[in-house]
Amino acid sequence: MERLDAEDVRRIALSLPGTVEKQRWGHPTFDVVRRMFVTVPDDATSFAVRCPRQDRAELIASEPHKFWVPPHEQNSSWVRARLAALDDRQELYDILLDSWRQAAPADLAASFEPGPVPDPGTGVGGGPGRGAGSPARRKR
Picture 1 (cartoon, rainbow, N blue to C red):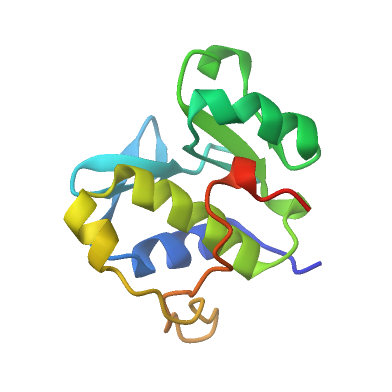
Picture 2 (cartoon, rainbow, N blue to C red):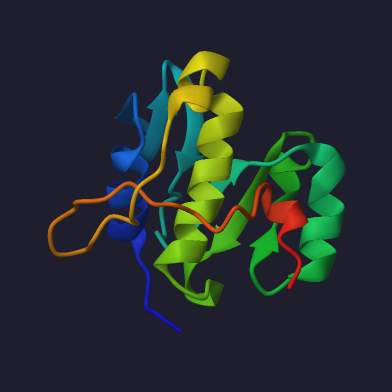
């Protein structure tokens, strides 16, 4: 397993079109056209992404070591992912891309052609994803 951190989240999120970083609640969040799609909480060992509530229970049940929802977020359409539990940058990219697509305007999401996952050394890329779709649909 590749060791991932908050800088990987930042680099990949910022590689997606229309993304801007903002500080909210004292930690980094990332928006696409004024709609938040990822946030990195204080401890920077996890991140939160959009996930349809109807998919969350199945996602968490299938990969509880990766995904969870804190009690104060139970009524939201967000799920948290543990960075240390992800397989690699490609999996991180797939999760962030799915959340970005949920937040992005339909025309922007439809027109985006992903490229390679951004390289940690150069930040170049824009990830093809594995066609995995929503995290809840990524059963292994």
